Length: 287
Image 1 (cartoon, rainbow, N blue to C red):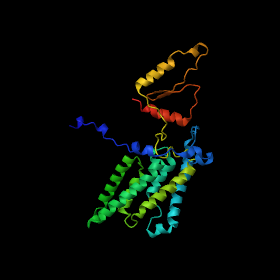
Image 2: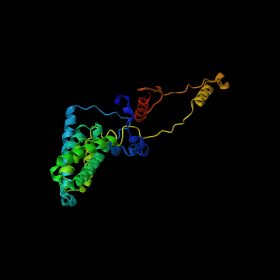
Image 3: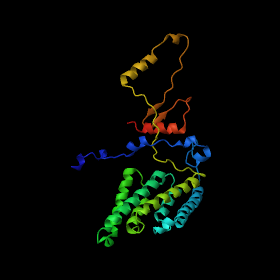
Image 4: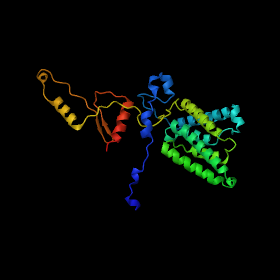
């Protein structure tokens, strides 16, 4: 019976609805020293680095990232009033991603920040629901497993997968009752601080982030949609000989050819790396 079901149609793409509402990052309009540390490189391709260089900046980045989050937590009175730990353990796992696997989709800002907010919200919510039961203290493993599972499902649907957030959901159920809903603010601010450190350290010799919201192009070029017949008529008119053809030879038009996984650009037409990336994304959609 299941063989007759087309599971490929069971698909939800949240970006289909969100991306048209998200503006393209304005980094290209900012001064280059500022846009550089926001991950913008323009037409310059990233330089290849040896693993020893990557290890060095990973060491510096993880140390600074964890230290900044811990120091702020220790010196903010409201954090201490809500019994916040020196640092939430999942930030250690997040630091590994943010400074060593900076090209991973799991390390990009959308996943790194939103996932922690989602995890802490779901974790605290489930923890409070379980606390309504008189047997809640004997079932922490059930609440923790449920929070982690639901958090993972929501991250997949929202394209915010970030493995350390699973640990945050567990913590929220098993150890976050005293912190309560304040854990959401702790995780949000901690994630922002970790991202701020990553923008500085990771952009000294590398590039971070690869993208802020999605790898898909957010810009929507203006496209004139024509039906097939009108397109053919216009093409025939352009190919028809004219009186001026006897005197001067018309300049042949330039064409950009898009095929499945292939983009052909005329030699005398210059395009930016961002434009080429956009064309490549379009070519991959051709069936």
